[in-house]
Length: 65
Image (tube, rainbow, N blue to C red; front, top):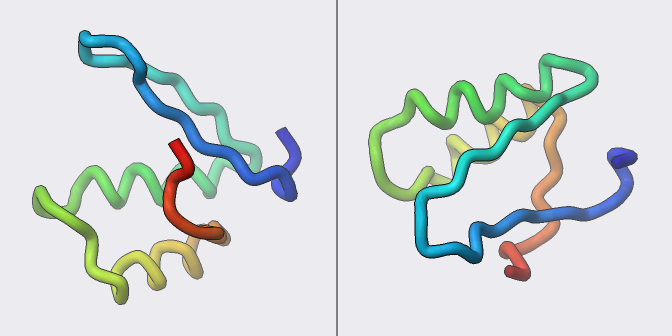
């Protein structure tokens, strides 16, 4: 989908979900890679801002799902 389209995803099943994302440009996927290396628990607002700026993400609000 184009970068200008807000989007989110949610697992509605009772089992653990698997999802595959394809990012273009590929550098955008670095956000998820770095996020997975952080300690468990909520990400600090400062860390989220840093990752968003570094990987050119924009969080528009809370997940609507």
